[in-house]
Length: 267
Image 1 (cartoon, rainbow, N blue to C red):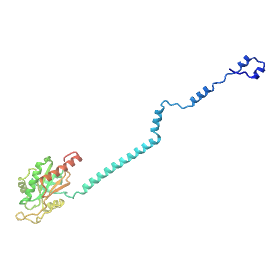
Image 2 (cartoon, helix red, strand yellow; image 1 turned 90 degrees about the vertical axis):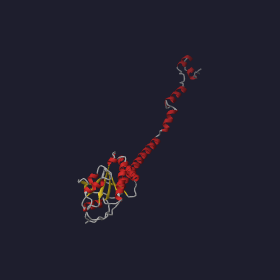
Image 3 (cartoon, rainbow, N blue to C red; image 1 turned 30 degrees about the horizontal axis):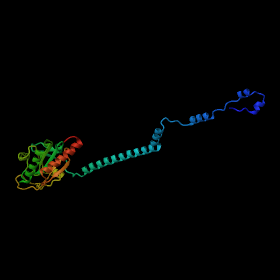
Image 4 (cartoon, rainbow, N blue to C red; image 1 turned 90 degrees about the horizontal axis):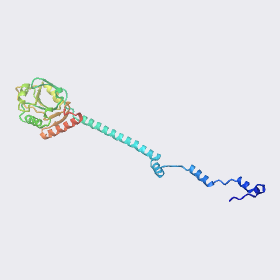
């Protein structure tokens, strides 16, 4: 029900005419609700979206980025340390080797010239002695032969006998002498100065008189070592008289294994 204002009745208009000019009040509540809904932010994800945004915030993104960069630098640093340590190990191994071996030129038991180049491409076992040696030299040569027979890769070894008695040990004499030992042996001899130069390069001591004659009767004092040289002609090990065949075999196997891991070959 609407009340008619008194002024409208006093104007001379009938109540119907007055009511026709009066508008019904606007639904304020409806307008207010629509305005509220239009202004309210709308999200289809609801709580799920708010949860996702809350986990991966700019702060957490920055944290992950910093952590990733730190790990990258850490692993690079550790890798560099490992490479540097490997270089030091290789250097210490190379510098730690005694300076044994070097150039030489002698004559083999077959009459051919034999130099340090003939040691390349195989593992060499080099022994210095003389054919008139009563017991030590034959025992050491036998030990070398047995080690070669027992070696897993016998054909990659080159056994060498170097005479430190050039006055009496001719190539033909050495050839006869070596028949009692492993067939792979190569016998070497030369002039006194040539033998002396090779003994100096291999750190071998010998007491043969420089002016000795073939008919003289004397013994030669000398170093008793079997030298293991690698396929590049570099010194690896010196086996003394107390070294057993098993000692030699174990060292030979170890060196061949290391060589193969580095080069992919046994020689």
